[in-house]
Length: 492
Ligand SMILES: NC(=O)c1ccc[n+]([C@@H]2O[C@H](COP(=O)([O-])OP(=O)(O)OC[C@H]3O[C@@H](n4cnc5c(N)ncnc54)[C@H](OP(=O)(O)O)[C@@H]3O)[C@@H](O)[C@H]2O)c1
Image (cartoon, rainbow, N blue to C red; front, side, top):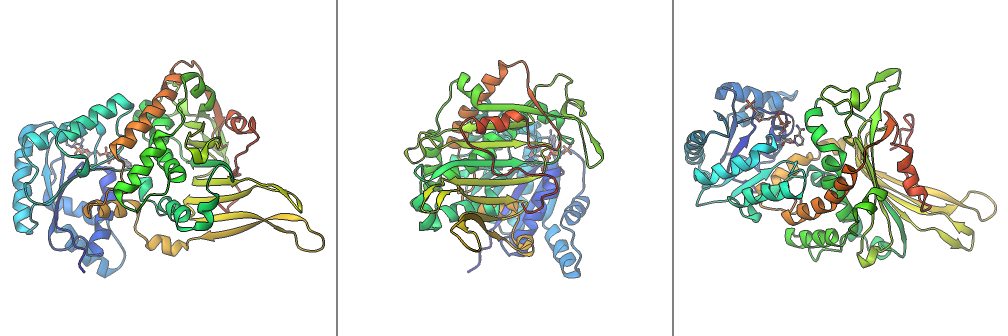
């Protein structure tokens, strides 16, 4: 059965970094699989005055490969691309855009399906949506779907304002809000592990789980994004979206089916059940910090406040650690520790579930750990108590280790390819529902409000795993971070 999808894809921000690095390769991956084949066209739009030919060169360059066959495919793929110079704030340009979309729809016998991709700065999202309606770009036949990038607002009121603008043009069922973490293989595998194994289902609750730990560690600093980052910080940039989505996957009830409705229902319930802190409690349970200058491998690394574009007295968080509690009956009393930051020891996204140790006929059994490696390594480990080799009955931790083969990972579709493919197929499971965004912003806004009353910020030297306070946060209740990397340990 053919899985080909007919569509005219309109890419706002067609000359941008995201389009070049991620979106064109993702579309090319779908082209090579036959999802996009004969009946599709892409209109790239941005202000700069490119010709179709120049644009096709850019697209070919972004999907460049080494084999000759690949070159021919890239050429054929790029022939479906058209460029329209367009300022999204200028209404008259939407008229030309509409005409071009209609012309290409006829030329490629598309049948009215449209995909609008907002790959540009968020301040334009509402303007584009409003113009798509006022200039009547949405078709009467076929589907009209919107894919929208993060950040989706910077607090609840701004997210709501944006959502109101979008829903003036698109229904919730037409909006695909990207959180590219949900396109990652091992993020999706959390659900397979949890609900595909009766063995794990039985113990996935407060009776057996001691804590859950989520780490999203970046080794890089703020790079060229200081302008944006100064207005966001790690809490808004990473916690409200990626960390919260992983948390939902780890604590939500089992969905009745792997359908979009069923998954969103249990996710939303998980967010509803998060224990809401007062500002005082939020201040006690969430730590913000900033990296300071350090020498890493003989190289001098600037502190955050010395980075270009960062205010010398900036209080922006480049690191967050927190203790989240849920009132969900299955997890009452189980702390969920989260941390994320820039300039940490090593890049890794991983989740550890600590299962309680306790009394055994062999003496005290150690805690068992299930770690799910999301990136760059992909797989999972389970650390269980085994018997130490030799005489006597002495318990010792044994580690079962499964990692996906790097070659198989390289051959698997990248997150964006997966997500765009799902949006083309009309599957919203791995996209953010507005309800979830509203819930997570409400949760995060309390932390922001608590921090706004603070006049100082913790610091940590670049290359470490955050400030001492992030370790004390766990230690005060008898917990500790399972992953405590040094720069030389390569296994994770
Ligand atoms: N880059 C990433 O890896 C990444 C990752 C996750 C999320 N995102 C999100 O993706 C979005 C795009 O990011 P990006 O890095 O691709 O940004 P970018 O490189 O700055 O690209 C912005 C695009 O918007 C166009 N543009 C700017 N003003 C315009 C206007 N008034 N009318 C029409 N076009 C205009 C620019 O082209 P002209 O200058 O020619 O107009 C360019 O094509 C952002 O929301 C970002 O947060 C990006």
